[in-house]
Length: 205
Image (cartoon, rainbow, N blue to C red):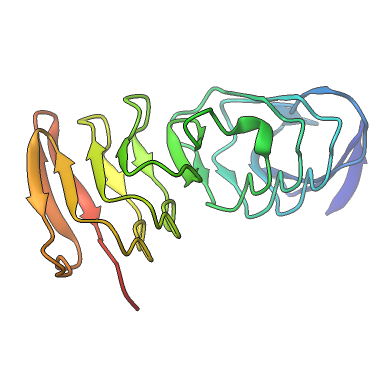
C-alpha cells in the first residue's frame, strides 16, 4: 500500500515500510524509524533523487537496505548519519553525491567504500572501511598499487575492473605482485580477525 506520511511517499504492509520518495525541501532530514507502528526497513530507488538542498540525512537503525540511485544527484549532501553497521548499500545509491567525496577521492558511507575517483598511483584504503563495493575502483587508470587495511572484510565483485596499471596489492602487510595475471575468483586471505570472504579480483571481462 502506497501513501503519504509527512513529506515522504511510502509503501508499507503489516510488517515493514519503504521510503519511496521524499517530497520536501529541507537541508537536514531524519528518516522516521517507524510509520504507524511499522518499522522503516528500506530506502527505495530514487527516493531522494536530485534533492540538491539536502546536506545531511539521518538513517535509523531499522533501515537495512538503501536501493540503487536512492540519493543520486544530491550534490550538497555532506553527511550521512547511520546507525546500522550491517546496512546493505547498493553501489550506485550515492551516485553523484560529490559532497561526500573526500579530498583523496573516496566516497565512503557506513564503512562501505562505494567509489574511488582519485588519481594517485599508490592508494591506501582508509582504516574506517570494512567493505569495498563492486566496481568501486572501476576506471582507476592511474593506480598501480593499492594497500588494503585489516579492517576490510569484504571486497565486492569486479572491484578493480579496468585498472590496467595495477601491479601490486598489499593486504595485511603481505604484498602480492600481479605480474599481468588475473587472480582466481574468490581468493581468500587470512587476517588477524579471521578470513576475508568472497574476494573477487576482476581485471578483464
